[in-house]
Length: 286
Image (cartoon, rainbow, N blue to C red; front, top):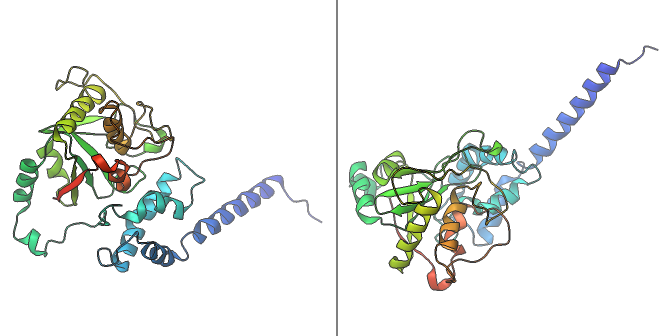
């Protein structure tokens, strides 16, 4: 009998591990349609707003790759758990799809040029507004959240390739016209708290605690990008956690947002983390 070489045995074992891993991974995607049906039955997805065919297309092209990236951060999470974290790709309050791009044949788009929409966004938005934008962002979650830290500027943590390893100095401020121009092909939902004076207070807090200590145009606060379950840790940070922290810390002792022990805040659920008395309303989609 020939002796089995150690190298061959190791290769065989590695092959079995990889093959088993592929089978486990494949099992997660064998009955995706039933997850959509479950979300519909639980009143999470409105099939009139997000038809199954559209959802399945986004699931394959964007959700699944984002999940695979997210597993670099948390290898234990299942696909169903990740979908629940991201509310299956719809906003919790309005059930509007986050990933759906604009239909250029729709009447409301056809009657307005992209420049008109950019101009309207710039006129309508103000300090303290929360923006939830769709699209395929390199952040491991669905959508992206930012805050206007002044009437004319957007503060954000955009993430980037390799985000799961952490990204240094990721916070940035952009003129809002530049920001919306870069995202005009996706839908951007604008949320605003009715107490606009308090919202402006939050915007100033965000500006002086997440960008510039003196509220200037030159950044002297440098935040690293990393998703962690420590909600109250300022650095590192990520997009939707920064927005939540601005309203949590920037409103003093007022019960504006719910306290969270630990976890990950996804952009799709951000508006529902406000208490009823301070709940933001949707100004519009641009």
